[in-house]
Length: 189
Image (cartoon, rainbow, N blue to C red; front, side, top):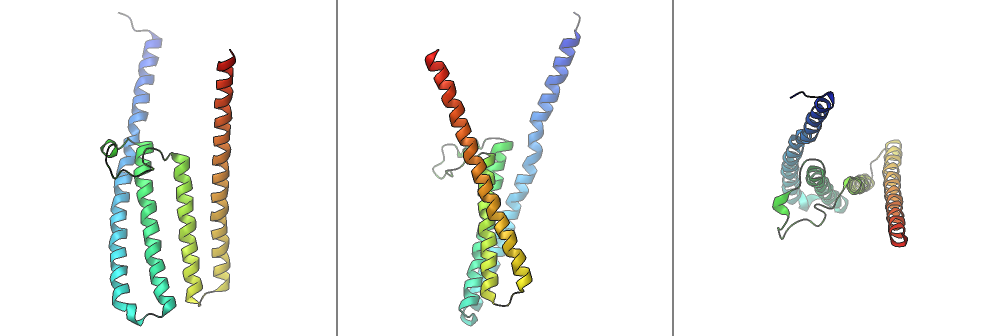
């Protein structure tokens, strides 16, 4: 039986596509390392809580609020790491089947696509940036030049979030219009 050039090309194409599809597993160590980072954030958080508890009586009101803001900041960073780890794994590597019927399944699991992930990331970054600015304001010992650039960077994050959200709204409207046109064509044919 003679193998044609078309069969050879098709076979090579299949092998390349299998390799490309399997390459998604190269991302899995990155998501595992994000969980290690999440653990390190927990260790840092616990250390900050111990410091806060042992020094709480000597803090003035602003220092007290700054310590709470630091804890909130670490919590937001941890949330961001978890969201990226889980949704990135689900979007790019494999569905997390074990969570499918679990009662504690996170509401966004399996539904957070790449554009939704970008919006969650940028909103977390905006919140973290805002907390950093608030901490600087409460310290009352800041360099106006440094704070100017921090505010500019924060506003850039906010603007980026607004642009991402606007692009998502436009894409969704385009999708709805496209599907509506398809439905209209089918209905009247």
